[in-house]
Image (tube, rainbow, N blue to C red):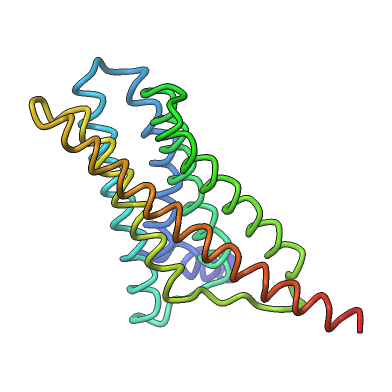
Length: 197
């Protein structure tokens, strides 16, 4: 019994709770549009997304500062990161339709995130693919673009300008996504070649 309590105490740290909250927030971004009328739904979805994006930065910082890096956190953090971004992108596509200016960067981001997740799974236990500084900028650009695009729906007169800014940021994010994806695959393929040699 005492061992179970200790395990639960180590698992339910503040960093892990923040990660789980981000995971729970991911579908709520989409569900806001089924529960509320626009522009209230836009404002709520944007607020949820921004709060979740902040936990992405905060949970890792707290885990390292407090010595609470855990296997649970390492498992859930990338899942929560992908879920919040991909569900938000799907929501934006549903809201704005299949216009190529939105759909092209969204498709590229989804392709890269899926491919890199598959590569990491393939290399699990055999090689590590550490996150690069450019990949962190990629994540920041994605989160900023999605925040602006979600917020544009609640911006009234400023909506058109914010939407254009959000699209520009999304294209920047897509470019960084492609570059970092190519870098990961080059490193992954180098490992595969060494293993076959």
